[in-house]
Length: 277
Image (cartoon, rainbow, N blue to C red; front, side, top):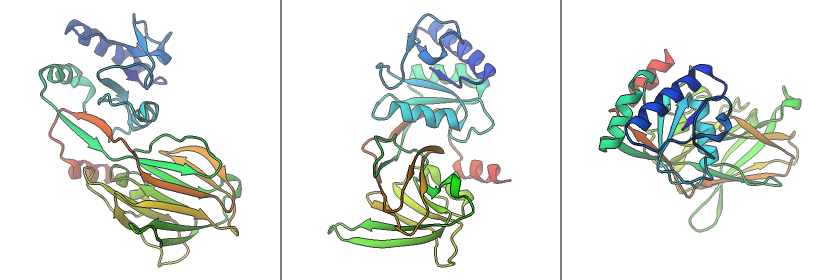
């Protein structure tokens, strides 16, 4: 179980969930980072110790960070909403007992969501992105534009220009991420069960720089022009590195999807438009 560590309410809820799950006969392990915050008998390290399923208690940020830790781990994730932004979360906090009961009875569906893998010049291993990879003007150059060229490699191995951006940067998004930063930047809404790559320019100067949707198998290369200011590389909202002019970021479909347990019939588009109100 992985609770939002900075929320006393989420930590208290995690204890209630753990106690109920144990009463139902489950062996429950709490995120080792919560040691000292929640009194429990057994702990585990997400992404290292093997478990059958992982319950995340928090908002979208907690879910995204947990997915980063899991990386290639195949354990499915059930999500209990506790936060202001719980778009990815499935279970309301008052329904946690119902979710556990349904988990034990097998009354759920398992959704697999495409993720992205990014490899950048001079940067070590990066986590898979469930939402998006962003290349944007470095903070210390805020107010200046960066110059990027976005390419894709065809099946024949030939590079093809998709988008040139003079502006604040570019977003490379998954279908799940199409309702996050990408949507705020003017990108399209893509069904989360599809496999696609959405490329959205950030505040481009040219009116011809428009969002593009590519197949999920696409290999996307973002090149930082040599006459650009430095840029920053973000994965799911976390800044990992500053990149110098001449650097490249290669983005492809991650080898393993995010596996999320859903207990309720999801009216996806109603949730999207409710959040937009």
